[in-house]
Image 1: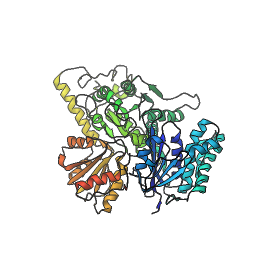
Image 2: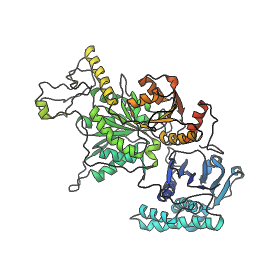
Image 3: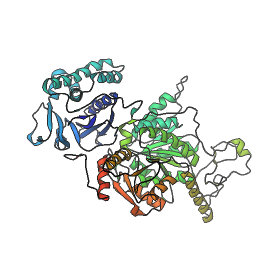
Image 4: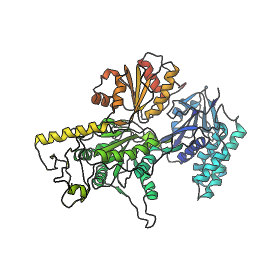
Length: 610
């Protein structure tokens, strides 16, 4: 059965062999043909030598989540070949380097084999040993171009863009592509029954990763200081911020950089630098992952209690401890929501797409200053490090930053006595100053110890209680300022609802279509922030069952909903995935089907997806 623009290609390589750029070239070619594509880079945490995979889903319908099963496996790594053969769907294709014969243990009767002597061809065509290794990857991309009917001119355009200023590399890459094309033309029937046809589905969308979007969002959000300690998978957030700031925050006349990136000795110090920058009136931020977030707890408590704005971008990965550094999860939810000891509640925002990474990062700086508290942007490895088809970013140049309740010298002069923690407006949010604004009025020092409304140190229990009660009042005010959830229906009509957040969006939306095909209609909501808005509470209240889809073992979002909204736990049913890979639509479908007594179904025909 022919599949046009609807299949999965998976590459099995060895880490450190230069395959990533070739595989991305393949993904970009499909995007340039106007077809929705979702690439996933599945790589080990060591530098080189271990198996790595790169998976590309092509979807005419615009499904951007992972799909289980592989239609075309391109395997050039003997280490993983057994598992790679097994994950190919019945009727699918297995491409391999036939320079050496394929061992009989890797033969399946229900799949098709495409042997191409990649190494042999490169030895004959190129003299440099490094080029032979690198261009082997380009040769199999050329073979795929012929087998899947990818327009060769698209590759020529992409290579011209990639090697602008290094034009001498273009003919070599073209030569390697043509080697693959010609070999297929001479030895195989082409195109295959899985193939591509040009479409005009992309429009003005872009292909970008979430970490780059966060970095750019920080620049547009007014950030000028980044305290930084590198950690996978968040490192490229600050790297992107630096790249964009160099272009957008450099004085054209003097060449002076109007930003600062400081690499600290550890994660705690990195956050401390960001907090210090915000206390002094700048907009500072940091980026980290789960292990770093664990180390930052002390300063998050300080910023919460002293009421200093700061933005922290948490690109989640699997844990606990070191866990699997290069696999994805949504497992920092509870750690982030109640970060630090004592009674704390931290503001969280949950982007699902690169555009939301851009938008919500910029918005996080406004929220942090308006609420005078940390705001944690909860993304994950899948969103942060993988490229996604995204709506284009937009920015209104007339937009003004929301700095919150900050008094200037003239305003302070009119006040008889400034109260840093005095709730003047009865919303829990007090007025602050930048240090040095006034000669003798304002806030000059900040401490994490208990204080009264005028920032005077005290261990009086009544003053401490008043302060903690005011912080809860501020928390309730924050509920009215959070990004609203996305509702997928004008009115809640079904008995069953599904609730999800972050990158679970892609699989959840596709699962809704699969459920509808079985005559099961559900209402749906996507959470974008914590504290939860009234819309989240109303959604849960109006449904008999709500399936909470999340990517961790302990149902952390479900626990947060029960704890904060006083929901009957039996009403919330967990749909979980925590193997380090992005959740799939058929995984969600099967878990929901078992709960409502439907016959479980699966897209997967044969084999398991690693």
